[in-house]
Image (cartoon, rainbow, N blue to C red; front, side, top):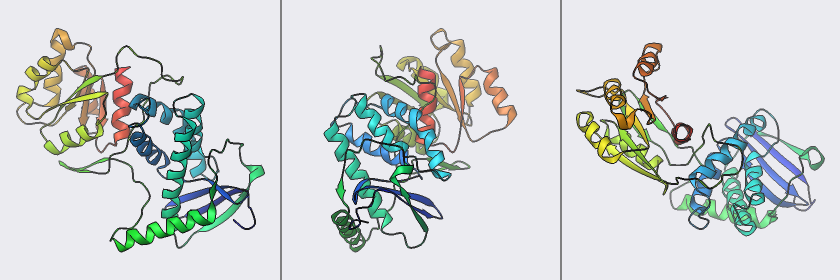
Length: 323
């Protein structure tokens, strides 16, 4: 492809993923996968926010709202590249400088190519450039040297005892009361305006999380590890009311199944307090039955978040109710 100066998209289909390598005259413009593309993009944007302070959680959530749904068409056989379109949108809306976007695209592409080199079986097709939507390409990587560099990185990782793998999404996976926490990657939301994020009256929120499981509390605290959130972790439901009153959170995450005082009772008590009549209270539970949801309505809970949930699911609820 490099010697023939191919333009188009090399699409490789494996049992677990679709790989898309976009080429222009033999140069690599971008490499991505249809599986977890936005988890990978968000992880990189989150790290990049240390250098570009404007890439706050609310903006990253908005990006997912605007573009993530388009990812399904690529997974179903299309060749759309919504994660790259999201990067272009960030540049066009002046949220991301061009030089930072170029560096971001290069980093993501090399990560994907490195993982792609481990693929041993699959079907492939070359989709001509005339069948692709026109896009602004910010990066033109030499395909040969990029593959060589990625191969060297892969060999080095293997010699160090680790194998390059595609980014995984974050999640809280519950089996009964047991919870495992996967890698932390960020968010998606519902209920946010689709226009560019404007200046808001409030840029910092206090979230109270009430759960008798320290593992769940740590997981949620990790999921909300962002400068716009302060998390108050409360593991004793009996003492929770006083701690909530003292901290006056903007939103409350409340576990349903707790000893001595369950979540429904605590929610009812909070609603009786004048300061918390309208505060968003989200019930968090692995129970999905109709009766449980009816109970949540009776105590005037604002929402019902079911375990297992991902970081994206959690932030979806939080931003929806904070807005």
